[in-house]
Amino acid sequence: MSDNAARPIIIKRKKVSGGGGHHGGAWKVAYADFVTAMMAFFMLMWLLNATTEKQRKGLADYFTPTIAVARVSGGGDGAFGGDSLLVKSQLPQSGQGGLPDLSMTRDSADAALAQQEQAMFEQLATGVLGRGGDSLIKEMTLEHIITDVTDEGLVVEIFDLEGAPLFDPITGQPTKVLREISKMIVDVFSTVTNNVAVASHSQAYPRVLLDNPAWDETTSRAHLVRELMDREGLDPDRMERVTGFGQSKPLLNDPMEVRNNRLEVTLLRAPR
Image (cartoon, rainbow, N blue to C red):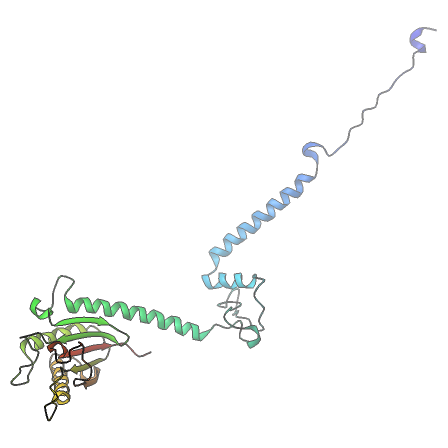
């Protein structure tokens, strides 16, 4: 027998294990997470494009875990039909957690109107003083006027200057300067519909006078200004009040100063 016949036959078996490399299953989990994240992202993009600001706020409130769930929902008919699913400003136990806060809505509207009115008053004050370049009255007449926007409205203060009174000392009638100012005020105030108030103030008179004329004088002057404005075209129904304050409200420390002789024509704020 030959040597080759006596030699044992050796068979080598190679073990192949599966799941290695890209043939494994771990990548499928990561891919599924990626696809889920992309789906959520595109869903978010669609919602941002298909909803209003109020509806988005409702969604945000709904998914916020720190807000207690109220018994009353704020939804309306159809998807996202309500203004808000929850309203933070209402307590859940009141049973009104999902209803719009009407008082806050009114406050916001009033605040917006007040801002618009404030801007209007400031614009009218600019028109009175002719700061826009086209002065409505002569430069010397402007020396008698200052304006101020107060809680009551736009106040146009008209005052005496030394040697240049608003009323004739003898006849008590309005001077040319006051007539021109009254016309200008009516022209400016005619652009709006707010009511108007006229008040007159006087410098103090010596205590030795038996009859102090300040009360009668300021009342008469306030009515003269009202009549001037009526003749210039102001609707009489817009005149809300006409008041003479006498010498009770001096502007300067010295109550006998001429500067205390003044008129206040106020464009009143609209009632709220």
